[in-house]
Length: 466
Image (tube, rainbow, N blue to C red; front, side, top):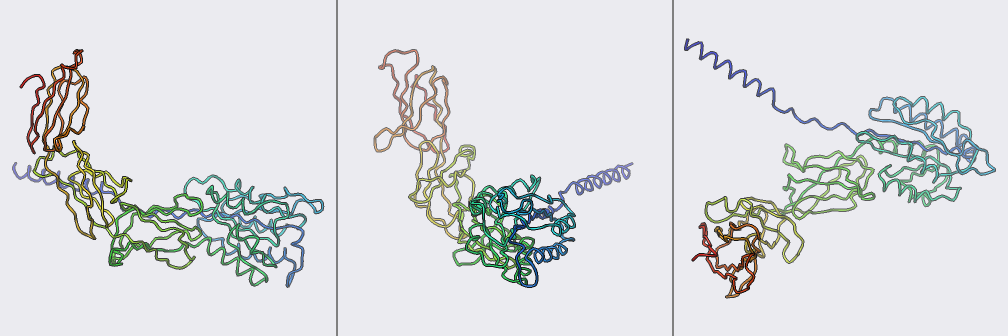
């Protein structure tokens, strides 16, 4: 019987261990790559009939763009669309509303785009600003994470009095699109498009084909970077803190990463979008920042920030943790009024190396100035263990509590009107309470009583008894 019980116990323990094992969280999988959506805005104005090297501009652009689209058929997480302008109305007269989304975004629509390109006949004018404005409705609402990219292919500048620069900047500011790409055919339009987006000059067929490939490569391929958080020796040893990557132009948060060291003891490699200029904020205390970081597509970028840190430990003398359970201290940079942190006692927190001022939120307040935080060291601030004052009022009334410093009364607390018994955690020292019962109508009825608080002890203050 004993053997049977023994085996039953072992069997139950085995089942519990299996159940426990099965409930362990799985490794967190890498998030899926974002969906890249590329909108081609194609110039089909009358000037595209112009001769350009081996053929007309329209024929060359149709052929080279179609060839490039063929290379994208097997690319995952990619959707394409085509907007055309200048192809619906003859010029003259000028029709500045001549723009249309010919092929909306969807998967596997490359053949549709190629067929539409082949059927285009240049006819009208060049409403670039209006086309950019209309493209804001071309991108469907993104359910998850999307990169909205515009590639403008044109052989001329705005002809309808619009402002492509203002429209582009508005769309970027709103986070609708990333900074557009512009490929200028047959002539250098850099000066006119620099404010619109990243301009590529295609003064020849070879240059046009090269520009297309470069633009697509930059649009599709993410770039690697690492953030080196440097200690006082200039070595990248600091880690385990959140980093926020903001779009420098729109101000939107693009990424949040907890800084990590890889298995070689070096800062982990990040894969991020090279089409955005970034402002990086590392959320140390206080935070450190670096603005206007430009990534070179296809190249590894090292982003270095000075972030030497040490530790601040707050503790109370003695072993009575109850008295300081909720005690906190405001931490400020030396000589500054801004609150950096509110730290609990019996807690250790990390700070950028330097000098800090502390305001301990005790009764009364304690001010500890010029606290030096050093690299990888722990600075311990210890305050006397407080005591407890039990103020027995017997009746409801009005009163205040004062600490006596240099024989002068300094207000620290107003007693509650309706509580007849109050317990206060106070720093060791001399105190004075002044009180008058609510039902008394004479000032001479006020009670003035002095008492002393000692560390770790409870002092009862009976206002109506000695």
